[in-house]
Amino acid sequence: MSFPAYLDYKDSGVPWLGDIPARWSVGRIKDLFEIRKRIAGELGHDVLSITQSGLRVKDVEGNEGQQAMDYSKYQKVLPGEFAMNHMDLLTGWIDIATQGGVTSPDYRVFGARNAEAVDAIYFLRVFQMAYSARQFYPFGQGSSQLGRWRLPKDEFYAFPVPIPPLDEQKQIRLFLDRETAKIDALVAEQERLIALLKEKRQAVISHAVTKGLDPDAPMKDSGVEWLGEVPAHWQVDRISRLFKKVGSGTTPSSEAAFKGGTVNWVTTGELRELPITVTRKRVNEAALDSLSSLQVYPPGTLLIAMYGATIGRLGWLEKPACTNQACCAMANPVRIETRFAFYCLWSATEALMLLGSGGGQPNINQEKVRAFRLPAPPLSEQQSIVAFLDRETNKIGELVERALGAISLLQERRAALISAAVTGKIDVRGLVEQQEMEAA
Image (cartoon, rainbow, N blue to C red; front, side, top):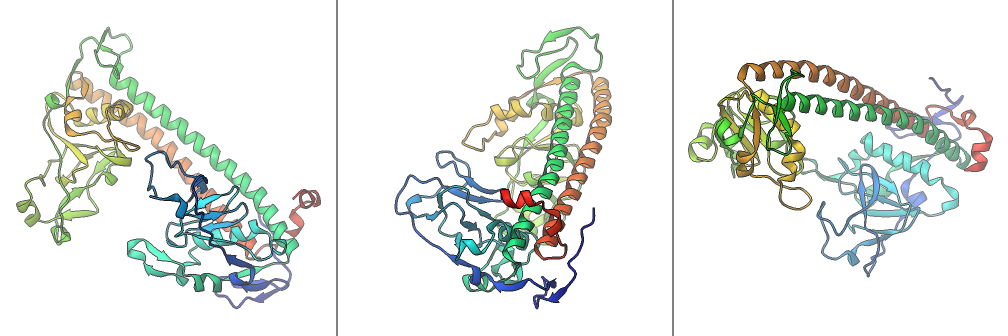
């Protein structure tokens, strides 16, 4: 759908803003907003974290994320005020508080100098666009390589913003609320489809690796909870008896180990249930000679992540490689196909997680991996199951990719629509009903 433009424009004098409607003006953030810093001085307030999804109440009793030593030193945020992670223009965000609380003293809290003169949500859209489109970025200082590219106070106050008449600010806000809600609903629909497809994929894998492809096969109790009954002619054994070598690797202490490197070095971030042919970093021969724990594993080695947020993620080597210490490597299979073991462990993700120890992000170790039991059908049957699962998971994977592509297009449209509306490239005044204005 196309939208009309304004009849008359003028040069804003701001390169990223370009031409704006003739009746709009351009001001600086300091003209409309003021920074407010009030240290709480007491405990008992909800702690608000700034995330890409907006302001969220932090669980200070749990082990997730960083925890402060003293939340009484946090600053207050009142409902309707802006909270901004100005310390990180790369991955930070900004939102308006819908409830009171406290947030990090490193963040920036600010509000309108005259709340009656601005529509806060309109300007929130402007500020969020400045983050996502990197309009704040040229005004930043610091080290972007270290993920610290901040917006200092003076540059923040001097940042230019479009200022439509107040009634137009409200109309733009109402238009965007309505249109983005439609897009968000379509995104949510695609996300539900992806979740259903992933559930179906998991069910297909689980049934194939635990029940086989013959629906008439006699069954027996496997003695393993996650497996349940398996075909009577299948064996069940520990991973340590199905792979001759189960080990790990290490992280070299110096970047010199990677200089001129030719041998792949796998980290858990590269385990994505896919074959691994090339890695972001490679180690050199000198590192391999000096670090005995930096073992090179052959093609066909199965890898699983043991620690942190990636626990349970899998991959297999198609080229020789070594790993960091968070990967467990299963090499030289005996009586089991690597790809069959891969599908088994993918199916057993929840069972593996239950073996984990630790806080919010449980860990497993090599001993638990070695002791974990997998089904071991005859090799010819394993190969048939792998071929079947390759076909079925590829079909599902294509549907998932199609849905992800639809989400990407919807998100691009959403961002473009917001940018066009808040900068005056489209005229939405006639697209908001009077009753919507009166109800707002």
